[in-house]
Length: 458
Image (cartoon, rainbow, N blue to C red):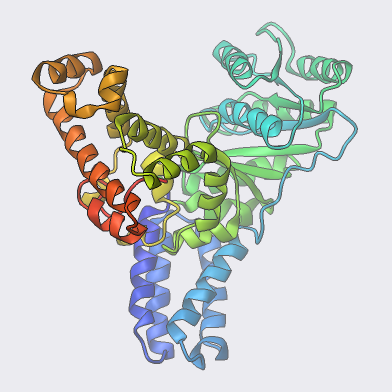
């Protein structure tokens, strides 16, 4: 998300940074660029006008014009206003209620409500230590009930069964009673969606809301809907006392307009952001970090937090000790590094959080395909334990067997062998007292496409 917006704003920022001083004229040029960038990102027009007005008011004042570094001062103004637009700070779920704390989830069909409930169930159990029950009141789409039951099994949440022949309000009330009986901390209630806003849908959601009195009413919105997200948000905001927003599909080819519009239109904070299809792909929404990503400055804080949480530090330390002792970096070690990278969301998950990504050429970005890691892992999995420990023994017939077993071509096996050899040589230099900088230089250009300037993931 935010790719095109980030590119436009980053180029504007770069031009301003070189200015010795700023005048009202070149600030007007910069504001015009910012306005065009936000229009292309499909930000709602009322939101855009307010944002530009606030930036202009601060940018033509002493704060920027008299600054020793006016370009950077302007960037700070844009950054601060982006943060203010999206809500200042992350606001978590307010679950301080007599258990079960009921959370009602609403939104249009296809926005990702049911998937978001599965993600929230996992997040609440793993991050907040809560016991969770889920229930579907969507009696119009049988697949929705089945989908939620599958997600409940996957995440370990308790599923409260419902059928298409029941009244949605009675389903919700029965689920509250059962959650209280089972001493559950949180009950997540899925509601029916429609392809568009209609009176019947809104009336039903109001009835459910009135019957169960949830402590949180979350509006789920697809980040790819742009201007339409603003209209939908306004309709739901008028019908329900929303407490927060969940932004879905933030990993897709989205322009980012919804993220910049929905907070101001609903008056409610974006609490979570869905970043993929897996139930683990849910992040608390931090406006300051997202603003930093938009301006091409990355999100190192989130990256470090993710590494601390998902990387197996014992395995990383074990590999470091092994290399330091001069032991060979084998295929098993490479496989482990690739798996660690996948835990971090793969290249696509990492790139969004790294500074300067907007400056990477489009052709290079297109090469950053996580599927290549899947193929590399498949190739290594097709090797015998002896071949992984001693890859030098892999010759013609072994390569053909490995390619056949992994569903790849011999050329891909050869490419992986070559990449591993270069990594092994670089690791050997590091183990003999070299430093990390030299090791990265030795690896440059010999890693998979998209990792050419980096080195090992960890």
